[in-house]
Image 1 (tube, rainbow, N blue to C red):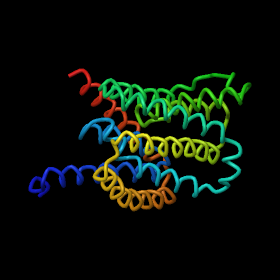
Image 2 (image 1 turned 60 degrees about the vertical axis):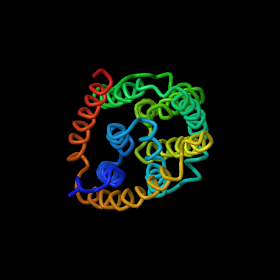
Image 3 (image 1 turned 90 degrees about the vertical axis):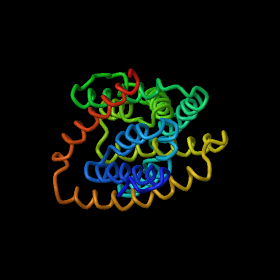
Image 4 (image 1 turned 135 degrees about the vertical axis):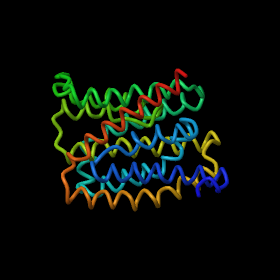
Length: 252
């Protein structure tokens, strides 16, 4: 039935399926939307288009995640420097992405995903992050933003920061989503200023938000009933496959 659709509708339907799955997993497990959606959408188009399509859906996911944990002002007071530096890094990374138009960022995205999986498997030790919280927030925020601007994935750097700072689950969710939110807003501004975020792409991205909110809520309800541990192995396996696909696309 999908084959009878026009190319535009087929593309939009494929994007909708991608974000529904990514949002459902994010709601079920608590993370994973940009890491799943970006490489899948990049396989349907190119990385800049994939990032633009996920801007509004990711922003919606970030806002819902921040609101669900509460204490927004307290989190902002504590992690404003980390979020600000991630915004600066995102601005730099996005400018590079717009100017270069290189497929090498698909390779960087694959490496970022593998880095995330490695960090989850092997616990790295960087005690200087806890000893020097101010400089750590500046450096980690900048690196996370730069990576997010180039590939739409900040998680590897933020996970290192969270582990070494010994953040609790709520603190990590608030800090990381503040960084993601700032990065998405600056990307939206820069793509728009460069004339890349057209009305067509904006409409497609806005439509995807509807699917994201529905799937995210279903996933959150499921997470409250079942242990997230049932989903983490599936998520890790999927990310490994996606990284392999990106490597294949780059080197083929």
